[in-house]
Every structure is written in structure tokens, then in C-alpha cells.
Image (cartoon, rainbow over all chains, first blue to last red; front, side):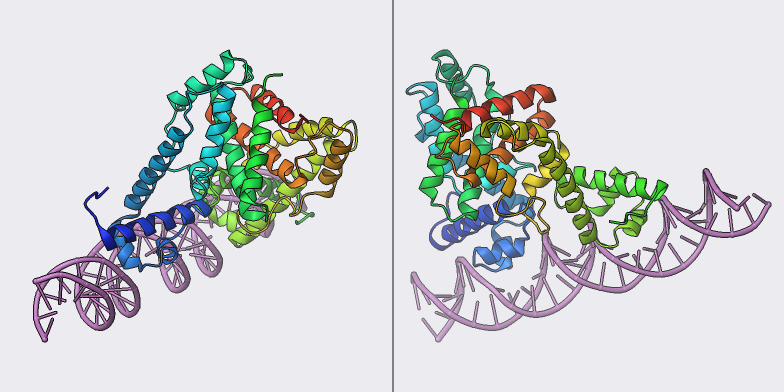
Length: 183
Length: 183
DNA sequence: CCCCAGTGGAACGCACGTGTTCCACAACAG
DNA sequence: CTGTTGTGGAACACGTGCGTTCCACTGGGG
């Protein structure tokens, strides 16, 4: 949003956004006072940056979309076989961390993931169907659901169990790999 | 709960419970007035059966556990190979319908699924690990997370997309089958 | 017929989250 | 030192969900 902010203001705004992503991921109905406390700022300060709850939600969605776009770009979806790109994307998205809960839980307005599946994602799946590395019986939409649910399950597994982040990522990759492979 | 209820009372209680499972699955913070409306009863009547919200939540959890136990029993986890039993369980659980959302969303108190994984589930996984039908690299806890996340993704897919219930179930089975198979 | 269990609408007090205003304090640049 | 900037506490009004009480209506069984 405000690109011209510097120093303290930019830092405070970012702290609030980060705390909001964490808290809203755990509970989409989190109170503003809880988000303010998590960001270690007063509720008054939060309202100074985001006058209404909807303003904060919009900023969180924008921040989420930006992080998501960055991760998608890092995955270089147009390189290698379809399945290779798919697994690379999973690895990149897994690093989104707290944001995964938020993306997966988004039943509300201002969606982070654009509806109808990203076109780069669809192109990657098509390539995988054609080069024989992705099971042609699995439609694009289901592959998207599959990926997000596995990523969310993995992230929850990290948060709840004591297993290390890297170890769980390998579990996710292994099961996704098996799930999308042709028979 | 009240086993001695008959006729109208039992019917009303069941209607409220069914509506509560549906509404709470869509939104865990659903208002009691919305649940009452979904059950086509007055809010007063709802309070007459479940004085406090926590009473309703406990009854919903009990009802959910009962349905879950029934489905688990139907799956005959001790028959066939580990993987066969695993997929049978997925088919049975998929029929839980609305309840899947509720089970997967339960971040609150009164959990429906007992913590630490059901012992029958663990025994089935162990058998699958030994008979070579379930990838030994996948621990029991992860297989549980995997199953629930796939079932939830499938159920959401049915609710959102126009795909038929049976068709989606086959997608779930296919991906789960590939995910748990040894390499 | 009357009784009564079951129901539901209306209204109230309460708790909580939200959005707002006002004021006090600390850090820092002039 | 003085004014500006960023902050946060206190208090208020408002809306909403919750839990309660009271009363009127309906339908079936005695």
C-alpha cells in the first residue's frame, strides 16, 4: 500500500501484517486486540494503520498474494517435466509457512489464490499430462486441491508434532510424488 | 444423551444435531440463531435442548464420534492387506459427508478424533508396513494426516465444483493409493 | 371437551469485539 | 529546550451473539 513509508512506520506496519497472518491462520475470527498483542503494539496503533478490520484483511490478502507470486516465480514452472515442476512448486510453497494456514482456511472474502486455478499451474499440469509424468486421470482442479491439502497437512504436522520442518517436507514430497505419478 | 426421549423430542433433538454438524462444518463460529434456523426450530427451542453452546458442542462431538466409530467398524480394518484396509477406510469415511469438514476443522475443545491415533488404525498401518503394501517410510501419524486432508479436500471439491460425489471419491482413492504405495 | 407437552416469538441484561476520541509519554531533530 | 512524530492507555457508544424469562399458539391424548 503506502509505498512512501520509511523507518518506524514501515517496520510497525510489517510487524502488524506478519502477526495478522500468523493469528488469522490459527483462527480466522481472531480479535484485533489479539493481533495487536501478537504484533506487540497497542490496539490504537493497529487502528492507526488499518482503520477498519476489512482494511487489515485486504492488506493481508495483498501481502499473501505477493509472497505467493514470489514463490511461484521461484519454482520456474516452465522448466523440466511436469511432475518435476509440480514438486518444485510444492517445495517453494511449503516455505510460505504460516501463510499456508491462511490460504487453506480462506472461506471469507478477498481470496489470496485467484479462482479457477492459475494459468501457469494449468499449463504445467498439461505438460505433465502430455510428457507422461502426471497421471492423466487427475484433472487440474483436483491436482490443485491435492497440493494445497497436502501442504496444509504438512504444515499442521510440523506445528503439532515435534517433527522437523525439513523431514515433514520430504514426507509431503514423497506422498505427492506417489499421488500424481501415472499407474 | 437422554436415551429415554421418544417421538417429537427425539426427532427435534436429532434435527438440531444434524443442522449443527452442517453449519459448524461450514463455519465453526456459526451463531446459534443460524443453527436453529437451519434446523427449522426457534432459538428458544434450541436452548431448551442444549442450554449452553458448550452443551451443543459436546453433543455434536458425541454424535460425530458415534458416526465415526460406525464407519470404522464397517471398514473391517483387520481384513486383507494393510493398503486394502486403508482404502476401505477412506471409502467409509468419505460417506461421513458434512462431518468431514467438522472433523478436519476441529481446532477447538472436545475433539472428535481421539488424539494419538486410533490403535486399530495403527495396527492396520503396521500390518501394511510388514506386508509391503504401505510405504514403510511413511509414519502412522503422517498417514493419518494424509488421509484426513485428502478426504477433506475431496469433500470440499464435491461441495464447490460440480463433480459427482462418486467420481470425486475415485479421485481420492486413486491419489491416496499412489501416495501410500511403496516405491 | 379440556389438558398439556412442545413450540416459538418478544424482550431484557450481559459480555465481547469494534471503531472512535482524547490525552499522556518517549524519542528525536531543529 | 521545543516541536514533531510515533505510540499506547482510558473511556465511550454501538452492534451482535448469548442466556434467560415470560407468554401465546398448536395439536394430540385423556
